[in-house]
Image (tube, rainbow, N blue to C red; front, side):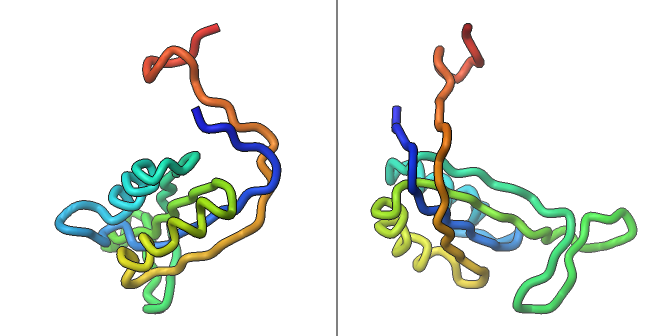
Length: 120
């Protein structure tokens, strides 16, 4: 299990839900590559509304025809490990936004007992 406390770096990647990499969702490819790189963790968040460089507003409201909602992938690890991962993103993210933020990890605890859930 990866241990992470104290100063860290957060990378957030903003892309569209319909962005793909070799016929699979781009957000999934980013998460799988972060996992393969041994990073502490990655999460994908689906937005309900937003716009980017195209200035087109994408929304999840019922009357909207837009299905390409904004997606944010958040990865946190040490600065060294995150910066080593950035070239992977350069090769994947053709359109989107990648930002870095300094942060502090207060608590990072994995589940015990495997993927089945919590054990006391």
